[in-house]
Amino acid sequence: MHLFELNQQLSVAQSLLAQLRDPDIQQDRWRFRHNLQRLGMLLAYELSKTLQYQSFPLHTSLGVAKAADLDQQPLLICVMRAGLPFYQGFSDVFDQADSGFIGAYRQAEQAGMDQDIFLGYSANPAIDGRDLVLIDPMLATGSSLLKVWRLLQQSGTPRSLHIAAAIAAPEGLALLQRELGSAAHFWIGAVDERLNEQAYIVPGLGDAGDLCFGDKG
Ligand SMILES: O=P(O)(O)OC[C@H]1O[C@H](OP(=O)(O)OP(=O)(O)O)[C@H](O)[C@@H]1O
Ligand SMILES: O=c1cc[nH]c(=O)[nH]1
View (cartoon, rainbow, N blue to C red):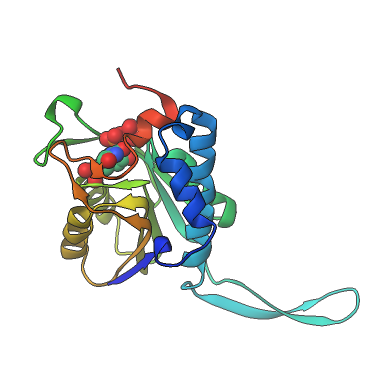
C-alpha cells in the first residue's frame, strides 16, 4: 500500500485545504468548487510521477529534444456529486484521459456507520489493464468507494489502482486498505482525526456535495 498525503509537507496546498475547511469561505460555492479543482490538479500531478512513460525524440525547429509521454492514458472515475469539481482538476492534468461517471449517495436518514450507499447513474469504460483512478473528495467510512470499486471490478482487473480524496478518515482508509489490498495507491490531501456518530469526518469540512451544489433536499 502506498499512501501519499499532501498535508505532510508545507506547501501552497495547505492554504487550499484551509480555505476548503473555513466555514466563512465555504459560503462562496464557486470558490469551494474551484479549490477542490485546484487540489485535484495538485494530487493528479503527484500521481502522474508514478505512471509509466515512453521516451521519444522530438524534432523542434532548432534541434532534437528528449521528450516523454504517458504510455497509456489513465482511466478517471468521477464519483458524483461531490466528485465533479475534484475530478475536473484531474481531467485538466490528464487532459486526454478516458473518464467514467458513477452517482453515489449516502441516505441522510440512515446516516451512521452502517448506512446504505446507493449507486445511481453509471457510465464507465472497461477497467481491464488500465491505470484506474477513483476520484471522490471525501473518504469517510469508505463504503461509497468500496461499492464503486465492487461495481467496476466486474469489468476486469486494472494495471494499477489509485484512490484520490481531498480529506480522508483513518477508519475509511483502513477499510479500503483491507478490502482493496496492498496494490492500491492512495492520494490524499489530508488524513483527519476520526469519524463522528453521523459518519462525518472530524474536523473535515462538512458535506462536500452540499457545499458544491446545495442541499439535496
Ligand atoms: O466514505 P463514505 O462514508 O461512503 O462517505 C463519502 C461519500 O459521501 C459524500 O457523498 P454524499 O453521499 O454526501 O453524496 P453527494 O456527493 O451527492 O453529496 C462523498 O462525496 C462520498 O461519496
Ligand atoms: O465528512 C463527510 C463525510 C461524508 N461526506 C461528506 O461530504 N463529508
